Length: 181
Ligand SMILES: Nc1ncnc2c1ncn2[C@@H]1O[C@H](COP(=O)(O)OP(=O)(O)OP(=O)(O)O)[C@@H](O)[C@H]1O
Ligand SMILES: O=C(O)C1=C[C@@H](O)[C@@H](O)[C@H](O)C1
Ligand SMILES: [Mg+2]
Image (cartoon, rainbow, N blue to C red):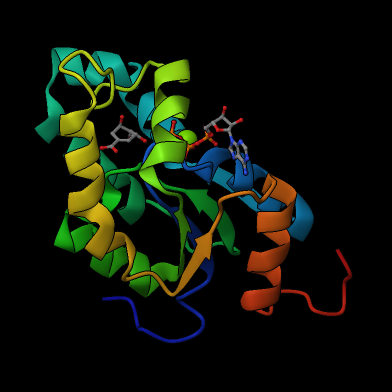
């Protein structure tokens, strides 16, 4: 059992829907802080030896979700890391407990009308292909909002560059106030 003290809450987790900028902002935040960056989706792909679309197609979503929880449990005891999570990580209660126990959770909040074109342009996400139209994806977005909103910090990202978002996170979490952006 990990104690819920400042020492155990060392990581910074970026959460938010698919396409919200977790990877982009996470990399920039890690660079700004000089911390290691971890992308949980990439960590799962490496451990399983398959891409996320392959895991969903060959093993199913349940196995993917199991691996997702595992990837949180496997975050080691080393120094704080900036962690970009998968868009669905907030779906499991166990994950939500792990996130808040292990670090500060930052929700990158964007309205659906900004996210949808990004998802359409990029493709490659099993739960957001648009193959059944975009309404089921929008519903998933809406369903997850209350869970994302349990974060320690919510950043309204509309109209902000990744670097501006990073500056806001650093300021709001008081991460290195002596170091100007
Ligand atoms: N603040 C921003 N302003 C404009 N475009 C952005 C911003 N942040 C990210 N993007 C762009 O949005 C797209 C999605 O970003 P990114 O891959 O970082 O999101 P994500 O939340 O990690 O998505 P997922 O993990 O679901 O694939 C990319 O094309 C990225 O360049
Ligand atoms: O929102 C989701 O459920 C997902 C988001 C991606 O980051 C991946 O974790 C996977 O494609 C599932
Ligand atoms: Mg990502």
